[in-house]
Amino acid sequence: MSGPELYSRPRRIGRGATLTLIFVTVLAAGAATGSWPGEHQKPKESADGSLVAAHEKPLAGPTDPSDAAAEAMADGKSPAKAAQDAVSRSGDRWGSVYSPGEYEEFEQSLDGEYTGIGLRARRTADGWVQVSKVRRGSPAQQAGIREGDRIAAVDGEPVTGHPVTEVLGLLRGKHAGTPVHVGLQRGTRAWSETLRRANLSTDSVASTQLPDGATLVKVSAFTKGVGDQVRTAVGAAPPRAGVVLDLRGNSGGLVAEAVRASSAFLDGGLVATYDVRGAQRALHAQRGADTSRPVVVLVDSGTMSAAELLTGALQDRGRAVVVGSRTFGKGSVQMPSRLPDGSVAELTVGHYRTPSGRAVDGRGITPDLETEADTLRRAETVLTGLGAPS
Image (cartoon, rainbow, N blue to C red; front, side):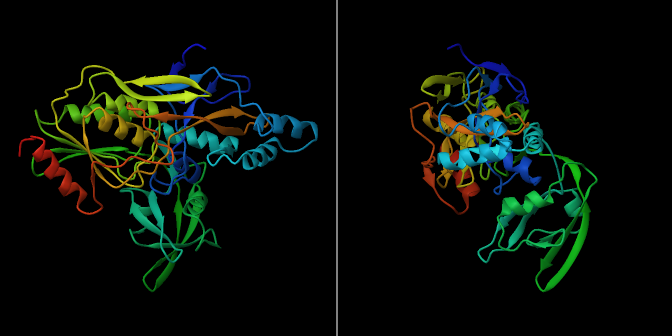
């Protein structure tokens, strides 16, 4: 079989068109929920130095969602419902079916944009959905919502005890300017706000200089263009200065962008291998990186998929010391196909491995230095030990 064909951006998958190979990660939840990409997000992702379109046919077999959809059409049933039933019966934990609108929003999020109110959220031990971060200049900030506030209701429906992704999905809208009524609690105070959704960019890369002269590059998700942004940030660091690559809470994104980001640290060579129904493929970094810079990668249990792929490459190639806690463990490959009603069904077709052949799916990556406290300070100490100027 010939090698995959490369594309610079996600493509909609037309009926009978070339299928797009997607590595699953949590980024799509930002598309499905309309929230700021973060720890609540649902998996999705893509492959190679650009998005990869693989010349593959949909999975065959009794659980094939395309077969189920065809049968449903013949019986006058909904193809999407039949496909969802087939995916559920398959036991594929990452298999899923998306409506046309949900998949369009997913593609939009991979382009680094989304429609929402601009907040992250997490689930508390007592079942509340709590705001964990508010984006500067967003509708949420303008309404006075703060970190620590609890979301009690959305458009009049109580949401306590509901999954975070579900609650954030209610906050999302397809169009900017549409209103959403949010019930909030802060301590003993309860109130409500009507916010208007906005088109927002993900701002996935932030670069700052640390007091000791090292450069901190925080990557929250691998959306379109992030690979070049990482390369620019690393290239702008002072000569010989160390780099802390912060991938904590990074839910993944386009593997294409993770591979491109690896070229900021690796002077060519293998980044990862992956299989699609037994056919082995390889991903490689571009040449030209300054490999003299000391590098530390920060990870945690929210580091997923494309972020794990990059972490594993830098660790296996001896290019970085990994500090933090074990990563999530998501390394599976999904193949999507368009159903007759425009919805998109996906099933897992393969997995990827690090350069040394380590499997990531269900295992994660173990840091070289495991710690859950003062991780940034520990990273700076490690950089000093690696010879970074201080």
